Image 1 (cartoon, rainbow, N blue to C red):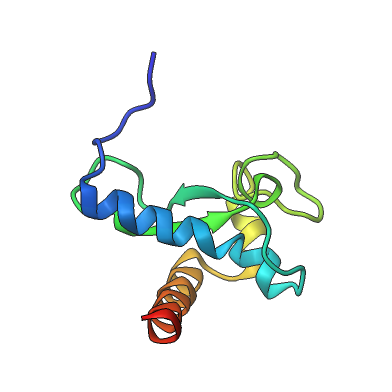
Image 2 (cartoon, rainbow, N blue to C red):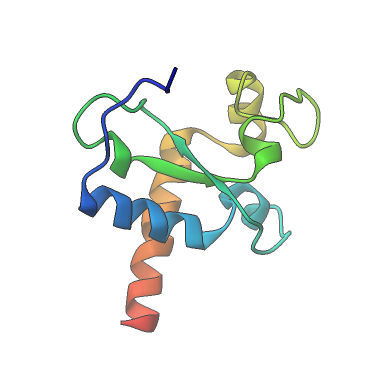
Amino acid sequence: MGLKGRRPTAEERLHMARVNELGCVVCYNLGFGKRPCEIHHVYGKIKKGTHLKVLPLCFEHHRMGSDKEPISRHPYKKRFVEAYGTEETLLNQVDTMLEESVDTYG
């Protein structure tokens, strides 16, 4: 059985691909450089536009399931937020990073 969610539009797929290219935002903030990542949907996958509200997180920060460093978003949201900031703050950072990459690379 597949995961629940609305299939992303072409625009949303392009956005998620651009976000994925950034690498894990938490690792970036911790000074680890660009690390391969997975897409984390901040508001789920059902509502319109939710595929545009995504974070790039490595496996360890996304769903490894650790409550100690590196703290995993799933299932430890509270500890994750305490350690790395709110998802909204990270979304704003990702948006800024995307804008800067457009300015740099056209």
